[in-house]
Image (cartoon, one colour):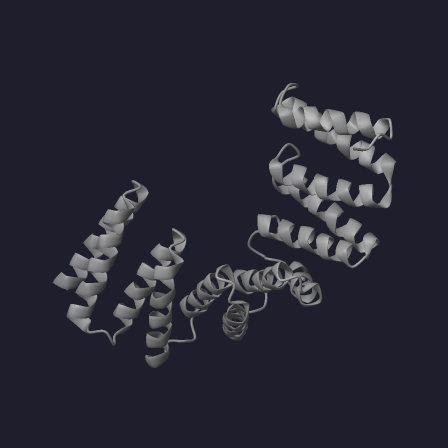
Length: 274
């Protein structure tokens, strides 16, 4: 009990150091907690697996992927050995490791980790569990970044078709799914479907984040680019006017971005494109 209290106190102090931006001190404490746990319980114990994961997540959160990767692997192997490889924490670690592999360009390994995490999550919870939806999106992003649009599409559609009962679908990642679907349909020449996806992204960003936000502006730009490609000048003009109004209100009349929108609108109205 004394050692457990000591580990809890160290953990609380590590969390405090993190909140204060003292990351080196926090790291040293997380390592100390891990060593203390190994000294008390050995390195073949569920508590040791727990604190391995805590240290790995610390490194992952601060994008120290080279340090996080081997610790995630060690923790996953230990949990599998302890027959604890069927819980949410195991699935989350698989997903984090998949992200690291994607970051390093190890796409096949990344896909394998995501697929394992998806299978595990579906086996424990229903398809509408938030982690299940997130993994589907991540698989879509993974294939999209490689230009494998045919593979990305079904993951996005499946993720967008599942409603989160907790918070609806008003989140930034849903917006990215709509925009990425718009991009891939555009590249495939499916312009009507692309327009629909971009329009849904615009509606979602307006409802979720507000009309005068960067998320909504970026979605409007995507739709404008599609209309420009199609030569739909009336639609472009409406969007350029909206972008100009937003910029003037929130950035000021003389801001460089505002001037760009004003010039774009002027050039459009005179059909003088640079």
